[in-house]
Amino acid sequence: MSPKITVLFYSTYGTNHAIAEQAARAAEEAGAEVRLRRCAETAPQAVVDGQDAWRAQLDKMQDIPEAKPEDMEWADGYFISAPTRFGVAASQFRTFIDTLGPLWQSGALANKAITATTSAQNPHGGQETTLQSIYVTAMHWGAIIVPPGYADGVKFEDGGNPYGYSCEPGPLSDTGKNSVAYQAKRLVEYAEKISG
Figure 1 (cartoon, rainbow, N blue to C red):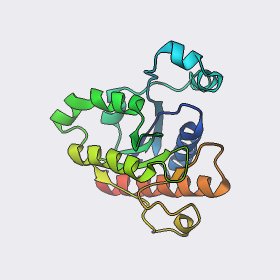
Figure 2: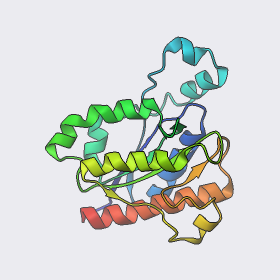
Figure 3: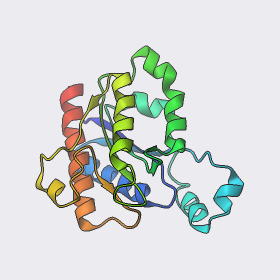
């Protein structure tokens, strides 16, 4: 039976959207059944409309379903991509996570594999603390963290964040694509082991 993976992301300008799409493709190539889901935009409409790039990105994602708690219950593993905001994940991602209390209380988020990626405006903008904060939440659920570590040579090419792929805003480089694909395939491998 194929492992089920929810690729959950929030993206303001497109970087984490591109990461999530790459992860979804790689997970499918690795044999997983995948749900690509985006976190709802929670910023005031006037703020979003005040930036053309933000508005355009939101319009671009309208065909991707917004995440629901049942997408988390359904999955055997989670690939998370959320931008860094002041050293932690963006509030739009956190708002969705805060809806998962009933699933957490019932144990429905336990024993699921999880891995995470992020972006930030500059190379030392809090990427590592963002990934660690996502993993702290996963520990509360009882999820099984599947970091990339340095288990593949691509981690020595992509900047070397062992907690998860991280980058600055903009299009994914070939190295970035390879790193995200490696992390997604590693997630599928461990989700299959855990769920099997």
